[in-house]
Image 1 (cartoon, rainbow, N blue to C red):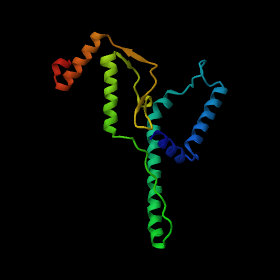
Image 2: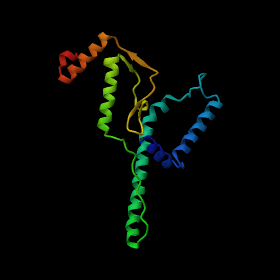
Image 3: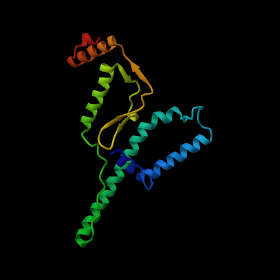
Image 4: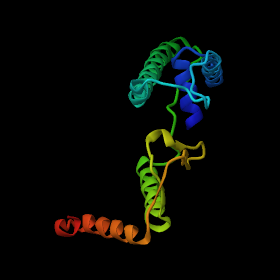
Length: 176
């Protein structure tokens, strides 16, 4: 699903393939590092606005790619109606990338994993944003970037568990 989405986005941006887009991005990163626009550790220095705008830009790009696919499919449908009348070879439709399961199931898995990390292990990812969650081609979730973790003692985990149970019971006094 990830590879299919990458291919779709690359083509929507005018690249021949996802690999061509990745190569261009790597060229830009190498150029950036060679110019010395990085800190001493080789990390890219990005303006705060660019980092905070990334999720919105990614969402806009997905909308654009989906709209482009719908337009191409509408064109194919129109062509196929005429092709049927003239006995010509029909065109195929473009399919959307798939999740490999239900979104609700993926979200349930994600909450379960983070709950286990927090309540059972006491060590959890302290920076869980969408960029750190991957949907693997076989439908499994991939969690990355554990550079910032939090730790909870047994007492803290018990307190969090009590709050979660109180929230589920809608017990305002216990939550407070």
